Length: 253
Ligand SMILES: Nc1ncnc2c1ncn2[C@@H]1O[C@H](COP(=O)(O)OP(=O)(O)OP(=O)(O)O)[C@@H](O)[C@H]1O
Ligand SMILES: [Mg+2]
Image (cartoon, rainbow, N blue to C red; front, side, top):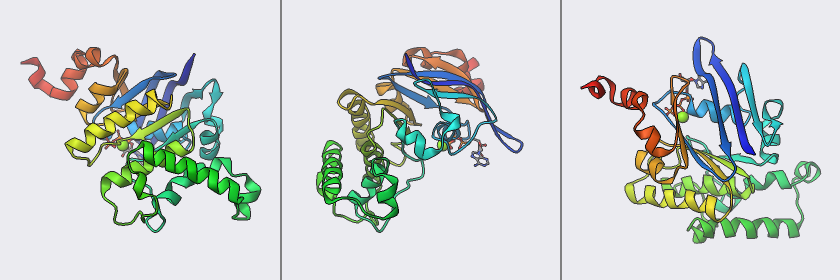
């Protein structure tokens, strides 16, 4: 059964068409990459999946549940967590507290309103947070404040917060942006381990082609909100429309 089913999604902002009839499935257990030039609609599609944007047309289902009828916090409860292209951390909280924000779906409304959770629950959540920091290779960072941390640590904190939500599917918007070569190799390894060791399906947006080619089961290429090609890395790399779009007229030479 296809896990995420995106059908004919159309999204425009006034006169700007960001997504124009986008259709694809992400299957359970896949690492699926979404690539395309700046402004081709990749982040808009993420925002449609997690409920920040409402497309004017089309359908988005996760395990047959219609996500377009749900609010962002309900979509996390359905098992979809995400990271952001522009890092969204709280600077004057510790890294551990930042990542525990991802556990809010397990804290019932009554406790949230009282701003209180039981000591036992706090201990359980902290233990899980520490396990995830260990998994990501930043185990000794939990009590450091977010402010002033290197970019790589901030990016990993975002990933940790998404994983703390115990998702079935994680959406990662440019996890390697701003990373050096060594850090990019590390991110590629982490994405593979998220699938292999944690059993989480991954939908990733990335511009780094060596990362995309090395980790993806399938790749979808967006161009001006439309799908240009979709398939396994080799198929997409050799697709004439992709070559033409990325290399322009020099592809005809
Ligand atoms: N909230 C918004 N209001 C108005 N226009 C928007 C909004 N969000 C996106 N757009 C427009 O939709 C188009 C697609 O933008 P989007 O951010 O999805 O591209 P992208 O593929 O993620 O690009 P990048 O690789 O630069 O992150 C762009 O023309 C953008 O200006
Ligand atoms: Mg984007």
